[in-house]
Amino acid sequence: MFRRQQQSNNESSGEDDESSSSTNFSPLSPPISPPRSSNNMLVKIGRFLNVSAIGVLSIVSVLLFIQLQAVSLQVASEQKQIDELKKTIEQSTSDIQVEVQEQKDLTVVNIAGTFTLLSCIVTMFHMTSHLKKMNQPFVQRKIMAILWMSPVYAITSFFSLLLPSAEGYLGIVKDFYESYVIYQFLSFLIAVLGRGERQIVVDKLAAHADHLKHPYKWLRCLFHPPPEESDEAKANAVLLECQFLAMQFVFFRPLTAIVSFVLESMRDGDAGGFSSPDFIIMMIENISVFLAFSGLLKFYHAVQDDLAWCQPFAKFLTIKGVVFMTFWQGLIISIIFHANTDDDKSDDDESNSSSSYSAKSIQHILICMEMLFFSAAHMCVFPAEEWEEGYQVKHGGGPTFAFDDFASDVNMIIDSGKRSRIARKERKNALDDAKQSPSFGTMDERNEKDGEISLVDSEVV
Image 1 (spheres, rainbow, N blue to C red):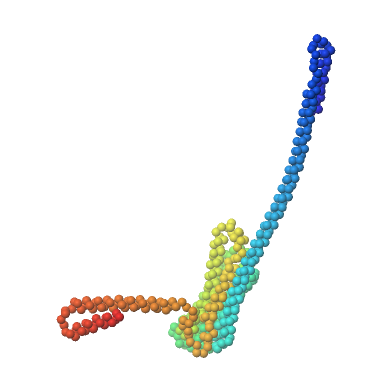
Image 2: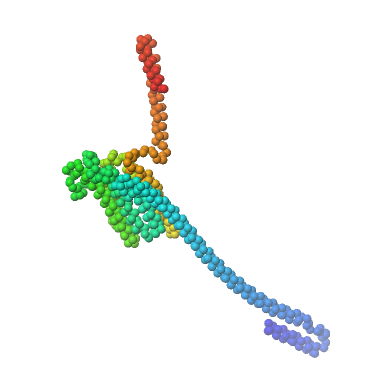
């Protein structure tokens, strides 16, 4: 800009010199007009405006830059606040989810605890009725030992739900009492049959010696005298065999449960195949269970007619129903859980993180609820009045839907219809025979035929 101004000044000075020289050396030229100062002024004003515009634009640019930086800082601070607010919301959401899950867990625990408490109350009330009417202590002691089964199952499952770390120890207690109750049921049958006297049981078994199966040969070392000597010796050997087979389950079941718990706590990976310790322990358990139930069923089949009045099969169902139902129920729940987790491994972690209950916890919850119904069933099949003097078996005295009566009425109506059809058919045949026979004949023959027809009519009526 300065150079342009200098050049314009030089040009203006040069023009002034030329004009002066022309005035000095050209007297014959016409007169020249004075210089245009207004044009110079406009040029200067234009230059000033250019400089001013450039300065204003520079200032505006600086102000815009500053404003942009301020906006950027404000956006950054607001983004930071948004991030902090987002973290706060996520934290509060996770806290709310934890609180909701705790409330769910507390609700489930309350439900399980309520059913456990009710099961214990029902069982204690039942035991109290036996204690008040202890007419046959040698029998009712066995019944009270059996009645503890429902509270033991419910309490161990409830505390396994509360304390998952103690689940293995509580499972050992539950398995032990399961095997103990099986033996106590055999002792209950023996006590009922012999009224507390073993010799009475031997004599009753000796009366059925022809139908008794010979005891196992590998148990001959326990029999004295040998079972071949007499019917009484055979009956004594069979009774001792049944007791031994049921008693071995009491010792093997807790032992295998302890070994399984130790192996599970020491295991790093999955269990092996058929040669793994778990499979061997399972086979030992199954053999022990088979022997125990074979002894129990052998004794029951030998004396079922003598024990029919106390309905031992219904009592056995309420005992073994607890074990079988809980076992198959737990197996089905485990299969469902494994089937859901094996569908998609990518979703496995999400499902495990979202689901707070495992198959075992659901099994414990269901056991706590079901033991209340088994306690009520024990009250029905083990009544205290059954052991009073002069007790008579009550048939159909409990709550029922009367399906047997309805079926009996249906059979009566069907039989009546069959008899009516037969009578009508016989009447028709008699009338046909009367029409085909000649009209003549003695009066007695006609009266006899009329009597047959009237007899058919009376049968129809």
